[in-house]
Length: 325
Ligand code: ADP
Ligand code: MG
Image (cartoon, rainbow, N blue to C red):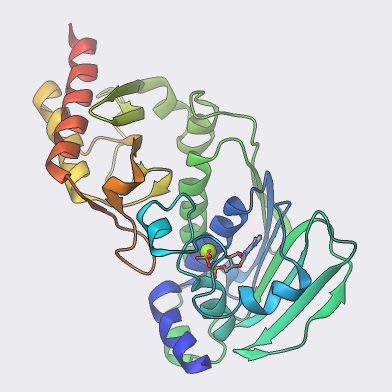
């Protein structure tokens, strides 16, 4: 089983940033309001993520780290309408197979906490642990047992910046959650967790004052969908392809179809060839979108992609045109 998990890890765990992404998603799915992240050496030496979410019952710790065990969906019908960030039950077993791993947790209703260690896929025993409510996942020495993978890890700075980019991506969608990060023992970032999706507090925190000042607020519903967020106006000229954040039902995804619609609306109104910068949230009936396209969940497939394209195009075209009037 360790081998199978290691093979799966090849798809889910590319680098420390992918571990951070999966673990933070788990914390968010568990209803965490505060997430503490400790990193060492760009996450290669240590990633420790502690949350104040619902926790895991002691007797369910082994289940949480076993393959395709997810508590988030129970049937194929649920898969049609996934409401959580996770649903494949692959992240924990994959990460645990390629690191020195520890999972400690305590449910709100439990008297005691417990922990489980896994060393390169070798499962230990569940042991009592004085854990507060919530969950801690500790990942040490990523890829220590997979030299071919370890070889592809980059310098500490590079790995750290990939982590920061994923945190920015996750934090933009959840301004209500506080996230604290420390690197090599020093506090390195704090996301305050006081905002809501309609305020631009987090936008400001994430993309800076200049973006926030030049961002056009968009919010429009129609055709069974809603598109809201911000698109930068031409005065904001630091735009690059990496300031394009798209979320579909709260999940950060890359989608060419939607990206094309945004670019098209932007250039049709503003006659601008540059990459527009944006943070956009598209919401639609989960049954209209398949999230189970790729193990790392970076892509989705729309049932009616033409309709989605038109909706995004028209919404942004109208909003941008108004600023020109
Ligand atoms: P998935 O998120 O797709 O369900 P994972 O392998 O990421 O799969 O996690 C397996 C299971 O472990 C989850 O379904 C959940 O029940 C439990 N779990 C993982 N992380 C946490 C956490 N931080 N808090 C509570 N439960 C968790
Ligand atoms: Mg998960």
